[in-house]
Amino acid sequence: MGDSLGHLFRITTWGESHGGGVGVVIDGCPSGLQLSTEDLQYELDRRRPGQSKITTQRKESDTARILSGIFEGCTTGTAISVMVSNEDAKSNAYDHLKDLYRPSHADYTFEQKYGLRDWMGGGRSSARETVGRVAAGAVAKKLLQHWGNIQTIAWVEQIHDIKSSVDKEKVSSDQIESSIVRCPDPQASEAMIARINEVRKSGDSVGGIIRAVVRNVPAGLGEPVFDKLTADLAKALMSLPATRGIEFGLGFDSVSLKGSEHNDAFVMQEGVVRTRTNRSGGIQGGISNGEEIDLRVSFKPTATINFEQDTVNREGKAVKLKAKGRHDPCVLPRAVPMVEAMINLVLVDHYLRNRESRL
Image (tube, rainbow, N blue to C red; front, side, top):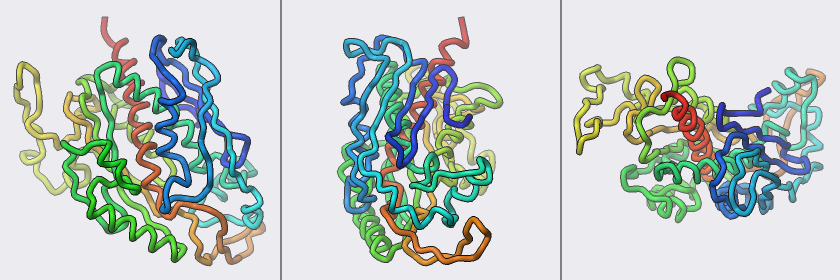
């Protein structure tokens, strides 16, 4: 029921963390788009585990296989199926968790809903599920580039209490990718890496904030009332593992302003309606206004930590748990491509819906 996202451009992810593989089926991609496994692989490599000393050391190549929907290098308009095999699943590392509920994980809630749970790595609640999202997001990214060079760019703005200073108008993908923590502020990046290493060695974890901007967005994307662009972006981004909040434009800071201070005045620039400021974050009334979409997403500290914690087992008895295995001490460096993917998927869906909204 909850494995799909989108209306006209619809994705369905499948697979578990320690099963045979993970993947996605993409419905509604227009025909004629040039697409190769290399397009997908670039994004998957940014998401994959083991890419640096501050990520989980699970070794997965995350090699994508396109099983359908492509002929002679172009999309055919039919369903695109993508598969990524699991290569380094170590299910026995989770044997000690079979009858325990890990604090702040989905173990207890999944069992309450379904009557059973996949205790090997968390099953569908694992961040490994996001492989399919990132693969589909790569397709959406190419469509947005084809339609108008619409560019989504995200970076790590904050880790724990370390904040960066980044000019969102000038920041580039190259600057972001030059840092293993994906923070384009060199000084803050070094401090973030040191903090992540510090908590990793102690067995703890930290969270933070990812900021994203979308450039060259046309005005008019979004639907009234329940399918507002803000609402759909919020749903998509909050469906990512470990997310805890989202802000558009000034977000919660806007509550300290008066209307006269917050309103974005309209002006004409080269015959086009623009806004002098962008406190709304590029979306008004749930519809894009042609300015940059500006948003921030917060992520909690990774739930798996190497500390002894109080919990209960399936029999309701109080027990002690000290988790073993591999995990990210901070999810944010690998979450950057996930955030970009979810934004791109929503924008493509609304772009296609907008094409059908007028004669």
